[in-house]
Length: 91
Image (tube, rainbow, N blue to C red):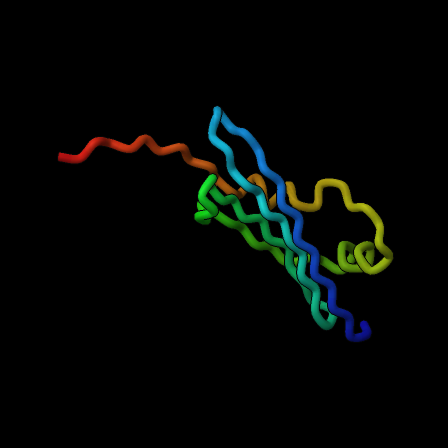
């Protein structure tokens, strides 16, 4: 495979139980190797959790041809756990 660089970042804001969170999905490919990453951030921009997986050759080939891949980020999203923790008053 020839030298090829591709970067893509998508950000979505979701409302979960009245709490806003940002989901950042990114793809990076460099020299025939690449990965996909999903990061969940809270309202202030602090990172809650993230998951990173390698892209296989079929996915890289489809991205090179600019084809839509349904369900590309679902394994990463399923591994990201969004926990709502209650804060306790400290004395």
